[in-house]
Image (cartoon, rainbow, N blue to C red; front, side, top):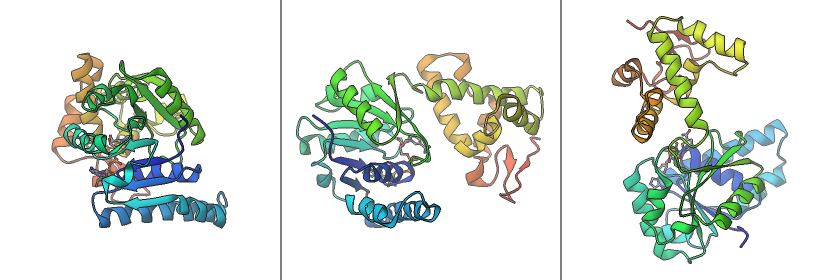
Length: 294
Ligand code: NAD
């Protein structure tokens, strides 16, 4: 069965991006939010994004209209039932996700494929709560979705190989570059990225170098587009702390243990760019200054 119709649950940061790329790739797409206000906010965000593409000349007016024409917003869970593939991008809480899947399960035909965009929860655990663990995968996009090329396609020990293949092909049809991985917390990217970011914090804690020198070293010495401490501020200190804890719980390995400084920054409310302060002070967002750490 080829995937022709898509449904997306959640029209926040990730869900709106996923709905946008699906509609732009030619798939009739239904996106669901919990209320009209959030739905409107998400759809407005998509329109703005498309407008920017038109301004840049990467999309013409007809393409914009066609993409918006393929996109339908709803607050009704029933409207997701006609899709071949449902991609869930709601809040990162297992209870909320399980409740969502339990509500959707009886509404969908048995061939519908379920996919979660979770960053840190177990796909196997979510799949086990549905009546279709063999048709359940992880489909992990990166932020911002319209820009980032990679999609991790995650199969569990219960996923049918043909279903994983179908979703892998679908990601390619979105114009993305899919990679295959298994249901281990962190998948590929966070498995490698999180210990690196935590090590940068440890280096700072141990007095190896200053914030700026650590960042400049990885930028200029390794060609990274931004240094690890700048990246931590961008991703969110509390988000990284949360993911590191879940990875530590899964693997029980020191390299995933969040260093004390990261925890102190979370407790102090220094969450990075979004709170105006992390490893840098963003009082002047165009000119972030490294903070003094006591
Ligand atoms: P977000 O808070 O921006 O969006 C989540 C949205 O889901 C909210 O607007 C909320 O109203 C809505 N929602 C909650 N329950 C719902 C339901 N039952 N039905 C429909 N909508 C519902 O969060 P986000 O950053 O977009 O993250 C969403 C998912 O994507 C999480 O699982 C997260 O781990 C994952 N993810 C996030 C990133 C990232 O960089 N932010 C990257 C990859 C994956």
